[in-house]
Length: 156
Image 1 (spheres, one colour):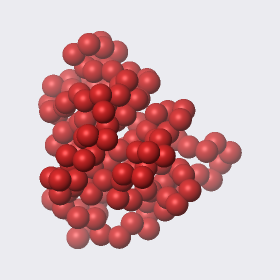
Image 2: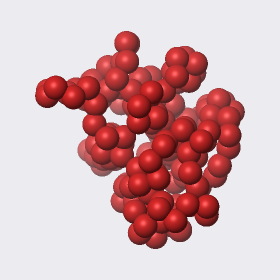
Image 3: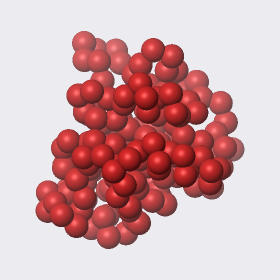
Image 4: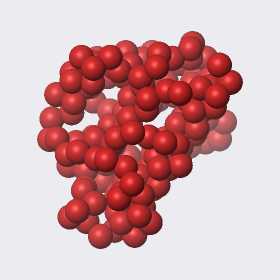
């Protein structure tokens, strides 16, 4: 089974943070890294309202500098996978078999991930959009990708 961790830099909505915690619990995520200006469950009751206790089940850590988290995870053998609709990103369904350790990084609801962070990841994937909107809510998009990665694990 794949080891899956999540990196959340600068997620503005505390409800999105809580929702990602809850989905992470469902997908057996091993750890969540909250970075930059992302709220923390021990300081923000709105997160716990949405996470419904998942914030107590999943180890999490706060670090202001996302780049340091990425660097450490790479040293620990993680494949850093950015979920971002940007130039050079591929449809998530076109990913090749992923290694045993994967870190999903999701970006800010409005600005996404910075070019600097995107230059540090191993691969960037997107969710194809068929309507007029350019993207899904960050917590919904994360859920689709996390379940897809876990489904690949069980089928391989």
